[in-house]
Amino acid sequence: MPDSVLTPQNPEPRYSSERAPDTRTRESLDQEVVRICRDLIRIDTTNLGSYPDAANERPAAKYVMELLQEVGLEATMYESAPGRASVVARIEGREPDLPALVVHGHLDVVPAQAEDWSVNPFEAVIKDDMIWGRGAVDMKNMNAMILTTVRDMARRGLKPRRDLIVAFFADEEAGGEYGALWMVKNYPEVFAGATEAISEVGGYSTTINGERVYLVQTAEKGRAWGALTAHGRAGHGSAVTHENPIVHLATAIARIAGDDWPREYNEATTALLEGIAHITGTEFAPDNPQPQLEALGPTVKFIANTLQTTSNPTVLKAGYKDNVIPQEALARLDVRTLPGKHESTLERIAELAGEHVTYSIDHHRPSVSAPIDAPIFDAMRQALNRHDPGCHVLPYMLGAGTDNNALADLGINGYGFAPLLLPAELDFTGMFHGIDERVPIESITFGRAVLSEFLLDY
Image 1: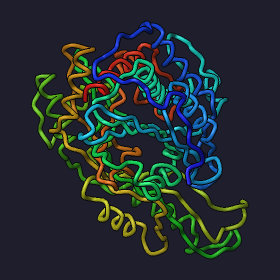
Image 2: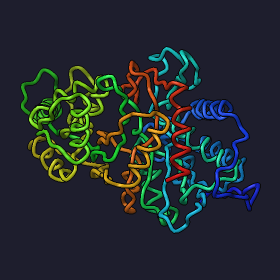
Image 3: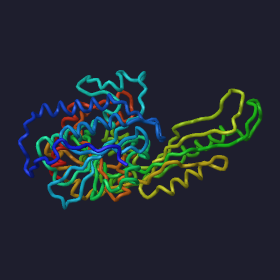
């Protein structure tokens, strides 16, 4: 059952279908989004893996609930395990016959090794007009933008056009088993009436051929996390043996890494590359997308991996003493699959593992995609163009995954739309899960304004 329900301070807010005068200055809203972002970064929600006590999102969930309660919004906290907390609030729209929109973020972050950073990763330092810290990019910046936007609506007595289901999930960084996936399985009624969702890793700008281009995520690759386990015969390190599991495992990894996954295109990747070709005055040829990829600059790191399957070993475990051959060796594998290729890819990995190695999968999700030719995409384009006239807006497929994947189980089409106007020289995509993660203050104040307009009008 839900952990708690907050009672609104004003149970019958006076709403208007017209925009009320904003009695708060633009500067104060900018200050608010910065303050909330920094507060969230300072709450350490590090997620160490896919098990019940791998993280503690509850303090951040409590903070989120207090912010919603403060302006009279009702929210519910759901705990899938002790400390693994998600928060959901539903905001009534002025046109109740329209499908609802889920606006969601995740509260957890990946680990940060403090000694590798130039600042404390959980201090939310402001330096060079940027907020530094774990989660500044992924994705406490967007959480702050969402919270500032809905708080402003509530204070001003504004209703969005359609119902908004505002959610802050636990456990996204470990696949969502204690967050979005758990919510979808156990409380699907929370998302009743919703057909679309927006969340992270989309809506950010990049510079192509001197022009600003915003990339909206309309698809994401599938994922499979599992283990390669090699078995052999334990013995003395000086022995002649053909049953060394480390050798079997290394051979399997080499085969998998050496496999030539073919380049393939889908609606999102094709539309993106054709759009870049138009902006750069080049011609997109499927057998040679290099001119378009090179035009992306640093953002290419996020795009190149969407053109083919990837299968990367991420953890190795074997042995316990220099002169002892172990009985077992293990590697963790992160596989990302293209649309329509999920099952065939996993079968291919098992085949490449070979006879001495077993391939087991403990978490996997297929790829998902949402329509590009949809009113919601046009609404995103219009909101961005009102705040950055003349910009381009293109779709793309994310090579990783988000909680939109879990909501797809309920038939909800998910988009990445966390709008950020970024400096051309900033390697933004390189900071996801990276060292010295940071986001420009002007980027999130811009994003808050765009998001506010989008949520009111769409």
